[in-house]
Image 1 (cartoon, rainbow over the protein chains, first blue to last red):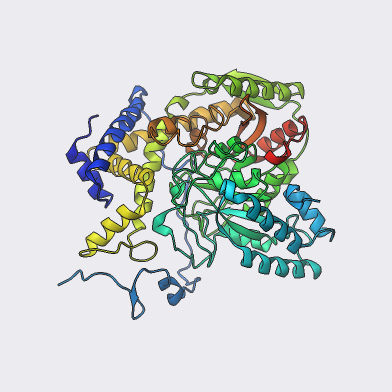
Image 2 (spheres, rainbow over the protein chains, first blue to last red):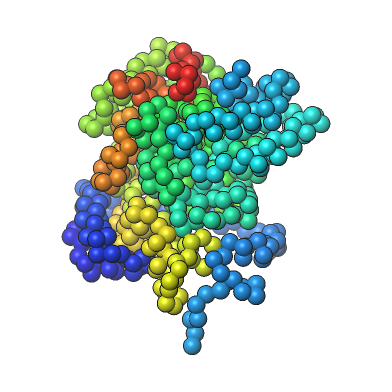
Length: 95
Length: 487
């Protein structure tokens, strides 16, 4: 699988990353060899196999809808790079 | 007496018998860290003030007759820096979380504190646990205490090196594709990756949620088993936690493997395995055989495809899990930006290191429309086949035996230039995570370069006791070498 500039730009956009031209070249090279290696899985016939996301059978866990945690707003906001009036502060997004 | 040379259980007993106070033990360890951590750099944060305050609090509890049923009351512990500690920086060794103070404790921290543990500090790791050398840490590399020109392994490199350097009595690491076992192997210490669902992941910063497990790293099998007793258990805060009837792993510390059936996957001894590692592993198998176990080689199905399947699945989950770092709620935010989209992009591009970016891009690619079936879905099918292969093996064998890593610790700076080559080093560990199995790595020899070799024992689901029993029995057959400074 050859990785084109378009592909790199696309995955960078999906991952919300901005890459320098040097980083793009390196990413192209690395991703090509890594994906080529991943394709060795095609040697294995899996037509009759169901994809498995969990190794154990997992069932939905139900509980009463009761509040058990009591988040402290000030503590949570103390980690924010910027806050104002008890809210996270972000650049203006709606005109 | 140098207290730092004691095992966790030995120190716990001396504290219980009032031969040593918790403060003396904590001070001795802090002093040791001051002396040697400049050379090894195991710690990101040393919690000197908090640990001393906590030590006197625990001593009061012990003097009041509390904690008498806890074998490790008062024993200091080091915590990998991706496990949340309330009010104490938890960075994941990343610039993007360089100043993050968790507002809550991970469940394992609550459990250890309830048992009287004193947290001494937060230890170094590969950024977001992505790496095999602890060289991708934003806060600098950790060096192998056996030889500082070599890596300690990763991603729990700080946790393993701290135990080896006697800068910690025991530590907690996390294992997504070998991150407890491989550094334990490289640093000559013992580490357990429990069955998926045995230890709560609540408060473990997520890398690949379907594979991550927290586990102990310590100086011997007994210490590991007692820590596992303390940290395991069902937790409603982790929806993948599996309730069990019995969490008493120390019951399995029995020196008897008579009749135990041990399988060695032939693929684990094949091309790519260092000759000295191979002969050391086979000698270890011989020891268990002489003690009465039945050992034979067999073919393990589909295991050759574990690395590609692992890197697809882990990267896919990482790309999703790490989308939460946006420069808004916590962590690093870029200085200059023009609008919200720019905050996201610049904060992430400046905040994440190369290996993390690489895996997020691989993950975004394998999940993207047009490639999802060929890569991600294919990997989930391969994972099913790998699990089936192990299921078949465990119909015949009680445990499986092999190396933890194909070689001993490489030199610093040798691994990062070729990521694919580094990924291939995980060949014997990743399949265990894909299948959700428990496994232990313990020292079984030293190569001609003077570096430790690790033996890996793999158990069936919730078969921790089988591997602990075999590991303990093997350990009894050897002279105790202890961590590096005793060697």
